[in-house]
Image 1 (cartoon, rainbow, N blue to C red):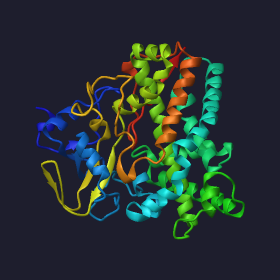
Image 2 (cartoon, rainbow, N blue to C red; image 1 turned 90 degrees about the vertical axis):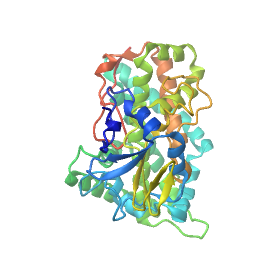
Image 3 (tube, helix red, strand yellow; image 1 turned 60 degrees about the horizontal axis):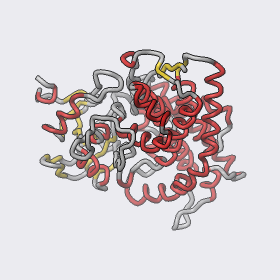
Image 4 (cartoon, one colour; image 1 turned 120 degrees about the horizontal axis):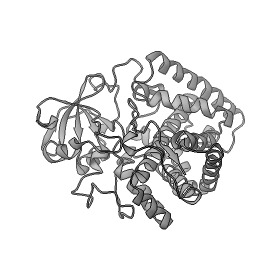
Length: 406
């Protein structure tokens, strides 16, 4: 009997049989149980939506909030800290309504396509430097550790005006917030406290002498009502940008290269035609079989999704990975087509809470791919694809290592 038909809540997240394979249950759920009961790592139950139209509707509907600290909201993890989902950042920054939109408007100017395009030469130079170091070190090497992990934290630290010497500390703080099981409550609380202390000093210095970086600009910026961000909001903003912009992109770089090198024809197609880089990045984002735990939403009123009526107090998990494999929306959804266009995937969410930094993430992924195609056209996996392993316990999915040679 399929686990979908067992009548019991599915354990969630649902792993695929292999690191780069989508769980078989995704297709079964979309077809027979598009709003399913699942049991979260905490032991609490939630409702899982897997069809494209349903996921998009939930993410776009303002009645589905991010108030995950509500008394009857499901806990994602069985811990006191809760990591990202119960951090100081989550409690300080407005999670919905006009307050959230006001916050987004104040920082959105830093993540426009035009602004990110201006950052592109610097990102390309960072990627070139990291590939230089990787080549000098020699192969085989872990591409994720050598390139995927450091590049996004360099970019975020540059945006925030953080000194290069503190990059490793930022990477650790990001990891503790996004990991659901790797660290103890004490380690997570200590990391959060260290980050808040560090960013508090950084914000104070920016207030005293505002620079041209993002936080320096925000110390003097005002919203339409003439209000400036408080120190606590600035610290939380720095934390939010680090978490959203580092570990997610670092893991996506690793998965992107794992997917492209797993089938040699994909890599050779790109080597032969580098103009496909942009559509290939979008297809990688759509095809991602391990996007993580998904996006949680909380219902503070009864709502109907498809044929299911969900009561007030329900926590809904949106599986963008399952939605992105929906055959009713994507032709040959189970196939990776590097020239696919249009490609309206939901990797960055939808609606008022869609990923603010998606233009930056796309630029980083494109930069990495362009540099590797040009510099290392003979790049290949140094282990059988079956030996690639997932990282367990992350809120965002990833591969433990991506061993390569050239």
